Image (cartoon, rainbow, N blue to C red; front, side):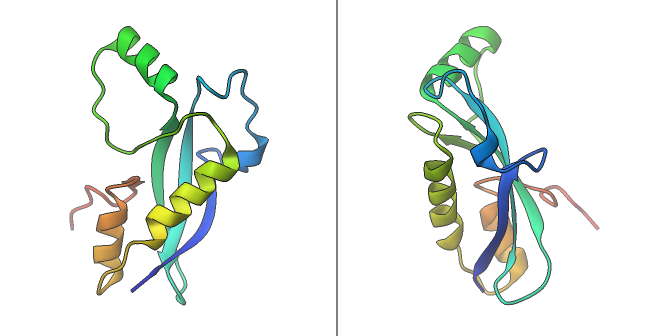
Length: 118
């Protein structure tokens, strides 16, 4: 089974191209990817933080160590680069069923059902 990306937006649902930053080389923004099984209905969310090394360094200095899960680190904020990178990462994931695909995608972004137990 393959992944179909429905949208890549900010957590608030705004297009990435609308993000206005003071310094693209020192930035951080929360991103949401809605993805589902290719050729089928439905979607689930995967959230991650896109940040630059200077932002990460300042955050560690301010708050202490950071666990590097659900981070995409870029040299500078550029919506086109972020979207292209996320598409490549997501499209490389394949598995026998959606549950297995979603669990693998959850290594990239926080999957909305990551800790869900029935």
